[in-house]
Image (tube, rainbow over all chains, first blue to last red):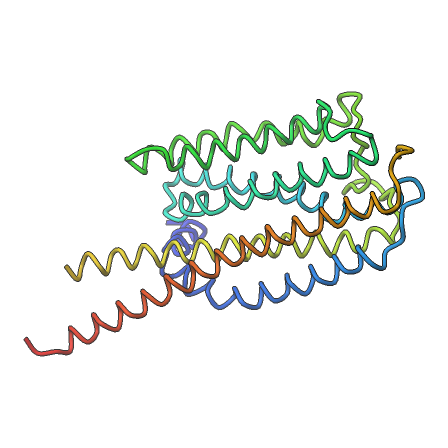
Length: 244
Length: 58
């Protein structure tokens, strides 16, 4: 067995995972709360209003991190699907069960806050624009995943079907990302990119970076808390059965 | 920006977004922490009782 493979299998052990992750939950949660409080209070009270959007720009501090989180959670879900189908990783299916609802909540909040931003800015709650529609499809993919993974009496079949759905559904992510370039959409193009200079003012960008970091760390903490709880519930079932 | 959107109107939308998101996050965190504590407590109890059982002479 290669060193990478043995490392991979070592951390696939739920007991090792629990021992490693449990002590990190409190510090991670504390850092995410501090980042979130700073970012949200800065964004709501101290950042300047946009010259064009006015005070409405403050919704961006929630909407953009939620859009990022919804996409990131789906990438994690697809990775779990690959790990489960190819290597039968024992933690991958458990992680997929716990990531789904968090990603679904993020995509729902992205759609709702986008709608609340759209009403005063565009004069409508919703348009069948490529960006909005592809994000709605992502929300339905999450709903499908959550349903399918729990839909079978034989949990293995449910996990396999959900893993396939997660892998196939990843095709929606580049559509979400590039929809504003491929089609003539009402949604504005990206203001922040890895390859280009941001077109957003620094006074607006810093609270956005803090909020994105806070929401991301918060989601990592939430998923790991749920995953640890799920593994402990399994251990409880095992001990209860052994006791009988 | 549409002409109908007044300052108060826009702040209503902003505050609605913030409060809705905060509520969702607090609810998700509360449920996760409650589940974690519950499982952790049950596991500790079971481990303790099985250790007691092993020590008790039959």
